[in-house]
Image (tube, rainbow, N blue to C red):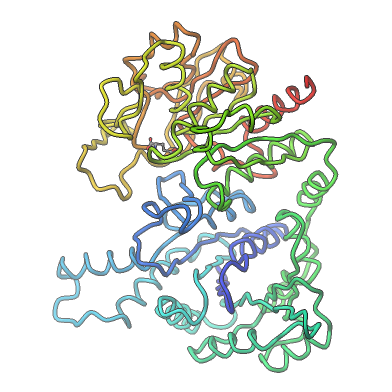
Length: 541
Ligand code: GLN
């Protein structure tokens, strides 16, 4: 029978609850159990798709086309289990569902209330996972004490009560701040946070205590005493030097053992060899390559979470450390790109939206093309590379994207129709913006003899998409004449999916997001190949 682990956070946000959940998932897997992880987000947006990455970090896209919280990326990278739409829910979606049902008349006669209608809807989301894995880990976004979290806490309290202690575990992630003046770790915020949880009827059985400093036995005792928890269930969670070390450090501190003990399961040693190997490679690289990410959300690296990780995976596969240099694209509008890019081994222009920074990205693609620096253009990064080719090779001086306003030479234009399986999706200028892009896994066909087909080792690929604009096929012929090969197309031949230059060591643009599928133990071939090309470039200098 499925066991449920509810993970809440206290004291402050950004404690790495998502990472902790993912690492626990990996540890349970290493003990031979199947796991499924999901996240409940208390904000009112129906999904994070319309939020700025500055607000909420990257939007993670699943195969089935959901725009979800970036923690689902951690879950997938740590467990290998592909995330699905039903692994993420928000208050906005819960209310949308309940209100749609109210309008349909499903609750005729009743007054719709937070309890029971909203809490029942949350419970239904959790219950849907029953039977799908040995362990279901449910992470509750936000911090205990937030007004928005209350219905979620009430729902998990009720759910735990219904299934019983043998099948439910509450794990609370807290912070033990170090006060330098006193030279001490402080336990009071944790005590308050546990009290707050207890006041809504939830008694955590395990505390995962984030701290910059080692936590002494006395301090563990104190927390155990005041929070009503076993000494061993107060698990120290110190900062790790790499996120892939987290499963190992948490295991050493006994996290998975405590979970197993709670459920009365046999405590056999997990097989952590995969993680040991990854960590060893991360810690002992044979060299370093420098990759520039020319983007727009460069001062919040969470905006490019999966990308940073995929680059790291490419490094792991090649035994090198990848140093990422974030460059705000708009600086190239005033300054010479060479001043920033002359010393990098590879240039990556990631996904993006809107006009700001676009000219800088076009210039980054131009620089990479002209100097034969490896270039990886992802989604927007491919579109900007195509605009560079149109403007500077094919002589279409005003080439642009209709994303930036009306234009007669929209080499990149709004996608109004595309095939999804055997159905047609249609969009217009006035379609809602939320959830209406070409989202999720779509197949593409790669042309044989191209570099990208060689890298994948197959002509048929499935990759995750998130875009509203596409390269206009009317320009394909004139661009191919200039050496830009359209190496991959949608199976119906209507949408360009990948481009590359023949006479360049490594210049590839893809309309999809390969970074979303890369894992430390299964790095994405494009990232492996890109980093390899960067290593070769670094040797030339
Ligand atoms: N803004 C572009 C589009 O909608 C690119 C999107 C992206 O990079 N994810 O097509």
